Amino acid sequence: MTLRELLEESVISREMIDRFLDPDAPVWAKFDPELGYLLKDCVLKDGVDECYTLSHYASGGERMMINHADQPCRMNTYGNSFTQCHQVSDGETWQEYLAAHLGEPIRNYGIGGFGVYQAYLRMLREEATVSSAEYMMLNIYSDDHYRSIYPWRGIHMRSYYQNMNPKMFHANPWAHVRLNPESGKFEEVANQYSTPESLYQLCEKEHVYETFKDEFTLNARAAQRGVKDAQTDILQQTADAFGRPTDFSNPDATAKTAQDLLTYCGLASSVFVVEKATAFAEEHGKKLIILLSYASPYTQTACEGNPRFDQWFVDALAEKGHLFVDSLAKHVEDFQSFRCTPEEYIRRYYIGHYNPLGNHFFAFAIEDAVVDWLAPKPRAYAEGEPPL
Image 1 (cartoon, rainbow, N blue to C red):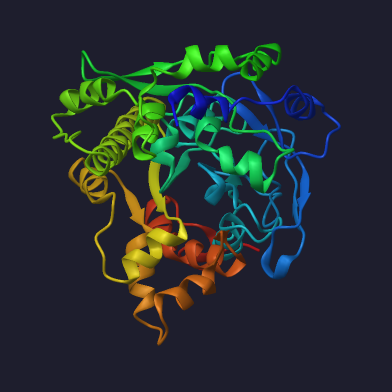
Image 2 (cartoon, rainbow, N blue to C red):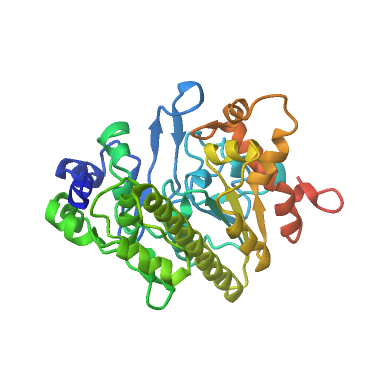
């Protein structure tokens, strides 16, 4: 396979974009000029026991609040599908479990598919509205590190479009961060496809090839797949910027080097975004907590006693003094309480994303930190008897 052939697999049909842009089409995503897409009300047959899940969104774009929705809200949550709580219905999210326990509402601005940078941009947008909150939670999921540096995540989602849901389009180009190999610093890049009309360029093979053939993440993924003309010189530029070793002597070594560089660049971009989010919070008198969540393979690997892929990122959060909760460590601790295999443990909480029990677990995995974080304490932890 060549780079051209690889990119041709990513070319989108006009019919798919027509459907995405149709406000009446039964799809769960809608176009956004900066972030690529946002969410809209939907019903999907993707829940526990193959049930339908019901998702509704308020006029401000947040998922519908259930518990204590009539009370003032001082907590906003931002992130990915593990923040949105994909595959469960309204009221089964970790925000709603935690809100019910604390006695006050929590807004959910999670968007399935977003990376750390896209969630940060959503934070900037929403915190400039009447829904601004003093306390902000930024949830970072295991794949989010990579998504921040993708100019177009759709390049890396061919199997989703071709096999899982060939009629559903999302993961279109968005604002992202890009490493400048000359300066060794990350730069913020605006969405180059910021109008509905511009999306139709993704239907043109030559446009897609010329636009993305020299892009770092595309060449890293291509090298992992053994694409014969993957540009290792582009990978070497990134390695030089980070001071990372490389080995392009054979296909296996090249694939391993590409994965190392992609992961390191993604994790470094998350450090960059967390620093920006922290600066934003300090500038505006807000409080920020970082929540780490993980896909089931990473949780299973950790329960098996294997090293984690993001250890240096977790160490960086600790060294820089960021307030964060590591749910992977919480899962490993919880696993010790069971007499089951790691595979059985995973099935308890995951159906791809968290099932309702998994969201309940996550809510109480972060509960102590959230209670300590809030001032004054939430109603359930108020000194003296709280008002009804």
